[in-house]
Image 1 (cartoon, rainbow, N blue to C red):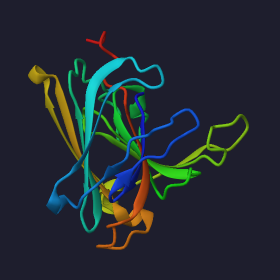
Image 2 (image 1 turned 30 degrees about the vertical axis):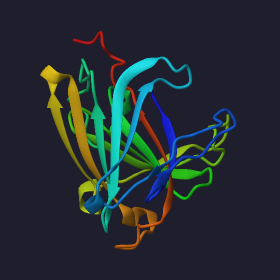
Image 3 (image 1 turned 30 degrees about the horizontal axis):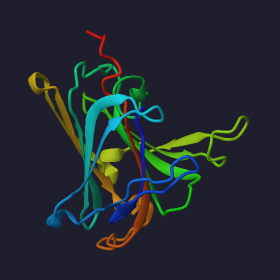
Image 4 (image 1 turned 90 degrees about the vertical axis):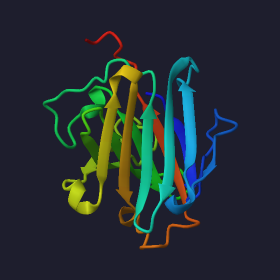
Length: 201
């Protein structure tokens, strides 16, 4: 996985950890004004080269809009038998971990999308914050994501080694009232395991 730790002021900014003296930050505009863009092409923590991945973000009155773009994708690897909230992370996914606030959270939303446009969405409860041995670590799934306001549209352009997923995540899940997202601060972590299955045919 290739994580990029951030916190967002919708706008969007990032939080440092003990081992990261500087973490990216980003102001995310309303969708009517454009997008904020994050790009990453190195693995973490070893900083080895990694296929360029881009995340574009903006917000509407009701949703956080995210466009995931994976370039130099070679396998588009997924399990066609998997459905919503299955373990799609066992194959290729692009994902976001989202928390409204800037402190180190005990719970957050985990959202994933695969090349087959299958999604995974669950609230993670991690009170130790580090998955300590013997500590609780649980997932509370969003069982009806489309009714709740989630959406994903995925386009694969295999000759150009390109995978794009356009995602909408409802702000109401984070107690943001309609039209009240501006100025809120968020902590977000983006990751991808694209290109990790290059030997798959």
